[in-house]
Length: 377
Image 1 (cartoon, rainbow, N blue to C red):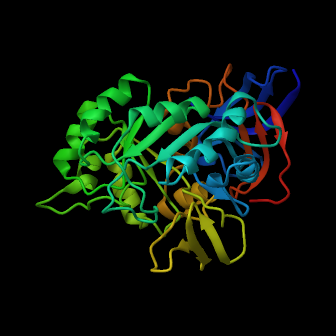
Image 2: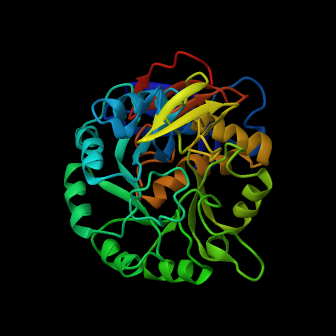
């Protein structure tokens, strides 16, 4: 054994007051102690041990953007680790293929070998370019139909674990089955598609929805749109709980409808930085009043971190702590088919966030290794 962590441990079977033992291999060797009522988890001053957060939609942080290439993704992973994120997908913008090559090439090495003090980079989320040019949101105007040849070239640079597409774009609907057969996970997003398009895309193998409610056709009672398809049929979907992208009431509606709704940050280079001007891919964005926007006022990603996402779920939306932990960790792991992340159980990677009763980060462990946390929360 190399480390014992004591506290109230949020496990798949409930909250255990006791000890989490981390082995020399960086995996959880044992969870020992007695179960307590979940509602008592935050009573008193005992530390809370939660599964490390998993963020499948990360553009940047600390003034760095994944699209820069170089060491940007590493620095982004280090900053998010300080907020409890122990695994993430580096996320691209819609861009020319040369820009995408620049972004993906250095991430391949990060995926192969863990970097000390950083969240584990599991691969890429390609948010575009296979989206609808009429629903770009904050994406640059380089949308195009799916190209399997382009995808295979990019996947050789760094593993593409997830891609967003608009199924109504000519050729994209038919491509979903091909992409799924090739091992890519497909999400629906940045779309002007109808409810029927969404249902058909799910039937062809699409697995979820990118930042639910945002950049997709809304729910109306006679035209339920892509939001209606998600609420009626989805098992998985992302949501950004920064309380700017989605109202708490809409989050509650999605929680009642989508069993494995999970949180993402959609964070940008402005995350953790003062108000001012930043880059999001080729776009100039402004951070002000807690949000990030284009010059025309369009929301352009967020400054959210996953510890804040957890607090918003629990303290504002009213989600019970154990369920909230699943939505910032476990369900994202399940979406990617990972049985050894997103849960505090023997055999899983020792990805652990230690928090106080106010859900402020006190310590973080990635595969058993400690992360330098220079602040609380």
